[in-house]
Image 1 (spheres, rainbow, N blue to C red):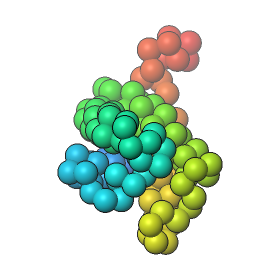
Image 2 (image 1 turned 135 degrees about the vertical axis):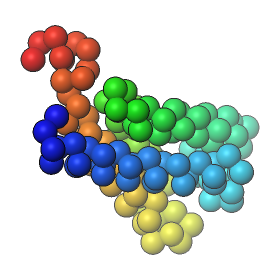
Image 3 (image 1 turned 180 degrees about the horizontal axis):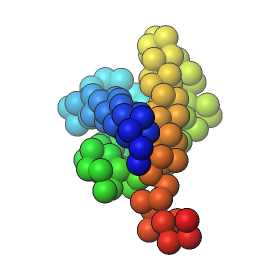
Length: 133
């Protein structure tokens, strides 16, 4: 990867990691907003499973994003997770959740776009794609 691409990759990976990591606190501590979101999506009986489960997936994505050799996998995992979040906002939650002014949705869109950029920049690191390219 060339100089500028490397800087863009690191910047995008760090921003995605920061956004995902800061939401982990709310998911793992059972903050009211997180409980509301997952109760709306999964019902009260599965709220904790969805909240903690998605937090674990996001934690794994953060770690993978920050390791250069696995950043493509972290980007793919964060892209999949955030696609689900965006879909949930558009179908069940709404853009604005609990008067947040659309902040969570906006952060989800940022994570989506930056994860796509990281995945594109590291496409040659993906085992099957690297063999073809």
